[in-house]
Length: 246
Image (cartoon, rainbow, N blue to C red; front, top):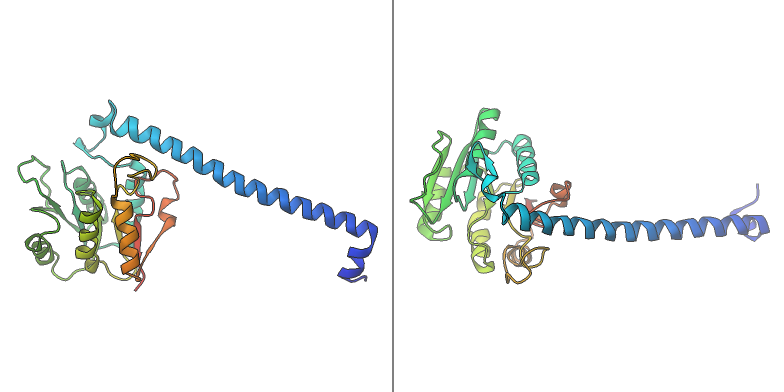
């Protein structure tokens, strides 16, 4: 049997080799441009959905069990997958707003038969849903007193954390520093609305959650982005699903 060198030297072999090389080039170009085109389409739909569904006429109609919930439904689907797989005893949430996402987490825990929600918001006068699994904490999420109250309620248990309060970079970075110790190895800390400041929406927002995550990951080597949580393409938290590795 002729060796690879003999095959390459043979005129027929050279032609076949050239055809293979040309196919590989076409394949590489297709993958590269296909990925870019797919990314462009995803970003365009993201902006369309964000501007229309979130800030358009349908915003008031986005709810969980009748309670307003300003979340991307595809992110909520990923949340329930994480809750089912990891079964955290506690979810810590900052940025309660109307309580729709807190009620969502409590509903998932009802289905799982275990779990509690500790949710923090600076506004305490808002009427929110009552549920045996939800504890509301009023105060700034980064105040030492508030963090201490959350620590007391969690009581040393492992937690999954969702940050969705003040979206300015410095505030989110302070939250990351305050709440990441609650997350165990293999657990998740989710920073929401990392799509702001042109990632790809609200290009004039200024440094926000996405930039805070960038800074945090430079500080903490034991957290990494889990891009697998973005498998449904549409997410308000690109690069914001952080898994603790150690």
